[in-house]
Image (cartoon, rainbow, N blue to C red; front, side):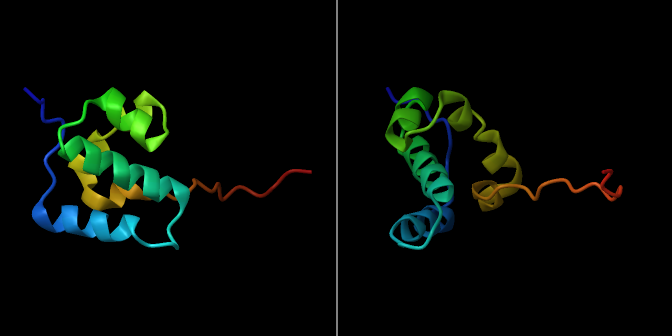
Length: 87
């Protein structure tokens, strides 16, 4: 019996499938999208990590998708301090 680690909505699944067919997406987005699709298809976390070519912990952080949806595909903006540079 397959364990469901993640259940994508129909529209999210279609969006991810279209996204991974594009030639212009970054490697990170491609890997994350593939891992989400694998988890939705019933793969284990370890299987999804191997198929995506990433660390198990990166796939295990799928809770980001549950919290923010497809925004989890993209990195958060880096924190920029407003303090002036010291030289």
